[in-house]
Image (cartoon, rainbow, N blue to C red; front, top):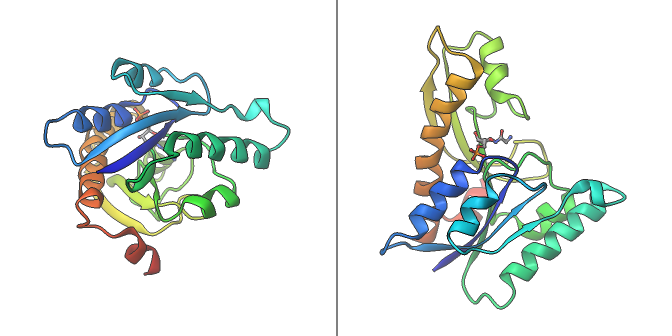
Length: 202
Ligand code: GAR
């Protein structure tokens, strides 16, 4: 069975979707830890399921590199002794991982992004799509590489933008799509219908 470490920064609705799916009787994956870069409200979802959590805040470290090393250490602690395959899922994790962390984990390191990458990378994807006057945006799951939202795309789903949309209304509709998308992609990885090494090579 595939073992997940999920990283979050905020409300954790995508993490919740993964926790719910992992609790299904026929689940093909389990969540072994949920980590965050702050005391994120979404960590409460993990606690509800009795899943261990950890927080590694950049403010507690002298530089990004040290923060990344500490985060990697916590991920490695969580996965120590795992004989199963491990996947790290950034599900609303609003930090750029230092290169040495990416190298240690990729291609078993995926990210969820609220836009049709390569359009609108970065932390303001929903606002950027609206400001651009786009009529369609969407959600992407991709393998994390050293860049900002530049890694190989695993799967995308379009979301139409309505004329009356605000940033919040559009983001909420994208998140509804994201929750299904992330669970479907993780299931496909667990079943080996998706091979991350192959996608990373393309
Ligand atoms: C999601 O829309 C996710 O795509 C986005 O943060 C939201 C987290 O929602 N991630 C990024 O923007 C990463 N660049 P959640 O905390 O409710 O899962």
